Amino acid sequence: MTTKKIHPADVADLALIPACKKLIATILKNNKPQTTEHDSLAAARIEAARLNATANNSRKALVYAITAEGRAILVPALYGRTPADAGSEAAKADDKARDAAKAAKPAKKAKAAKKAKPEGKSKVEIVIAMLLRKKPVTRADIAEAVAWPSINIKAICTRKGMKLKQAADGTLSASAPK
Image 1 (tube, rainbow, N blue to C red):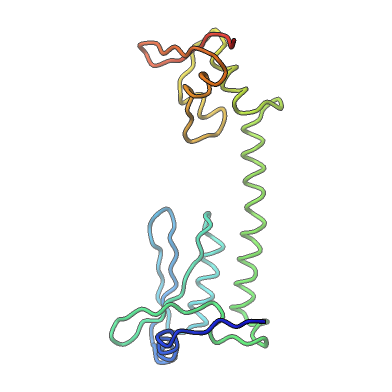
Image 2 (tube, rainbow, N blue to C red; image 1 turned 60 degrees about the horizontal axis):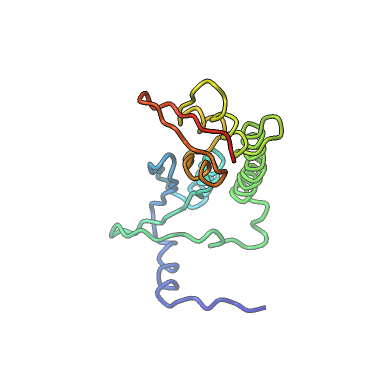
């Protein structure tokens, strides 16, 4: 087993963490930082686990120790932990948040896949069917039906040998595939 050599600057930073009186747990939610201040590392880790559990993205909460001079030092996840700490409240909260995040991700993917594929059709087949029906359709209607945030309808039509028509009101239709 190989061990990673720690950089001397990191060793110096890690030595400063016990002297820090202020610790911050922070996470980026909806492109805005959410930060809470704590007096102990254990409290900051518990808050970080809570932030992880409430986040709906793949970002992870971080804990920073703030020195007396105001410098922030990232506290590694395993800092100060031993195998005996595995049963601590903070470690249990971290494990619980991690398990909840893993369990939530597949459910979201399955739900999106169900919505995107009605009647067992592929997304491209759905786009083609919508363009070929008599009633004109908008780009927003197509994007909603296939659950794609961005879609190149022109490329799909070209690939399938269809001629895309756009009306003055912005609605789309297409000729039958060749």
